[in-house]
Image: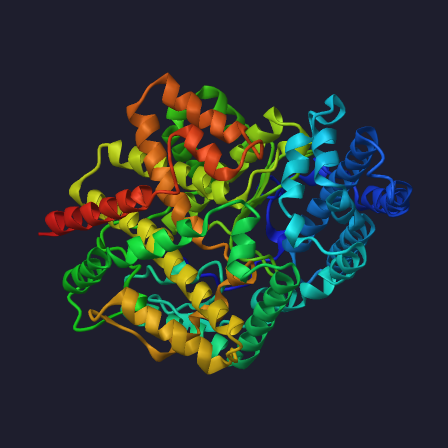
Length: 602
């Protein structure tokens, strides 16, 4: 862990290490001009109101107007949200972001009649319209809208719900401000006597420190900050759940989970198969914690002992540019066209905002719009191998976006989250294969084996635990059980015991870990990480061991965007996620890696 004695501000970061947003807007005043134009353009929705049943040509004109508005909003939104995430305390950028969120809400209100009006068209008449060549390009888009027939309310009701969108963000926005801007995570004295400020970005690096005293004190300090605000965090999460239940019930869905999965046309069985398969394979996970306890020669193993490298002689220190080189080498199986676009993006075209700074949003993501490059937010740490993997992960998202936008028209360019996590995890898996292929000694083999185990543990087991927690808290709330601080902690504590087993000592503060997971404010999202890594590992084997056909199938999957439902896109690439087999195969790989670690350490 590198000691940081002062807080880094954005002004301290070199320009080449910041993303270049000039492709969106050269200056903020141009953004303001487009914003004002779009405000005026919203009035155009009124001209189509009450006319959609008249002809296929009218429907086409309305859809194309709506798509045009959405495309303009998307560009404005992306610029504002990227600027806002650079520094969450920058009030002007925060204000611009709130403005575009508000305008998005106004656009949703103005267009809210469209689904209701389309649903009101008699089915035989709509069927006739769909056969008209005027709508041939828009047919899939319309069919997706018409799927919601029983979940679409009257025009007045839809407008009312659309008007509430801005209010509905309140819990999530409050969580993000508290977690990223207001929460003080304390300090820890490192092994060299330097006082280090604990941040969301460096916490995992500290958890890899070989000095157990440093890990323990940082762990306790970190969770003490959450404990001091636990009632507030519980209230925010409870409010978010109530919001989700309200919308699900008003839209005639049996549950929030069903509503979330209906959006992507994912069978509920995929979710249940994931949890059931993981429960059947807890033994390898528990064995891994036992091995860690044995190798580290501990009487008790705590959570702050589960990330420290098992090989003390290896000290990871790789700069951003060197990470890019390793990632590009690992992705050679995807062809030179793929790697050259990515090289330019990560270095030359400045897709990436690389380093942590005061007020910057924590974590990492890939963003962008149809009319821009992809953009990647990082909080890169040179002493943490996870930063290189995170960069490879987000690069997978970005290349997925780049290829789908290059291949598909705007209407069908956006892929769903279910398939997004496949592309990102695929890149991580290729990176691991590359690192293992190098001339490395036994210590490095142990290090990488443990890293791969931890990747699967964090993505497959941990995200499934999160998914199970989500399912349980929503199921309780939907039965009108009060979701209090103690209710959340009780459910989470039981899952911790089941997933970590009897070999791991669970500190009391861990029961509030559930309040620091931002993905819980995007209901039923986390399971896609687990299904994504399962599909990704299956595809990596196909591409690595196959030939041109397998590679083209995978690249066509990336280029497919939203041209098909996600389950069908994956089937086209060779993986059937309606079957539990991909998950079981990934779990078998985890078990094999644990056995490999046992052999290497013996």
